[in-house]
Image 1 (cartoon, rainbow, N blue to C red):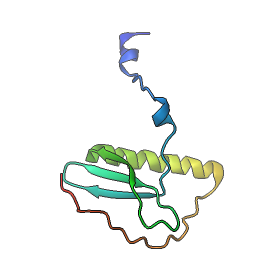
Image 2: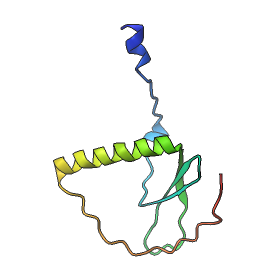
Image 3: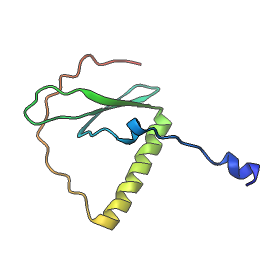
Image 4: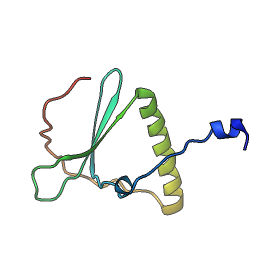
Length: 102
């Protein structure tokens, strides 16, 4: 393989713990001038308290690329599996600590 071909490749390692994934049924998104913060939460029925399970911090450019990539993947999923129905979710009152600034 030439040096040019190798420069275009990224070696990504996925350890076992991360590969298990984290279930989330709520995402809370905040932003500042320099970053987007996405907190992934798991809400369980009948339990009034939920914890953030994972936080992802993105630059505005990466957030926009992520939005585009997610949209393209949803489009391909719906072509193969049919439209994803957006069910009505009850409003969840969130007591999410102080709003932070970066």
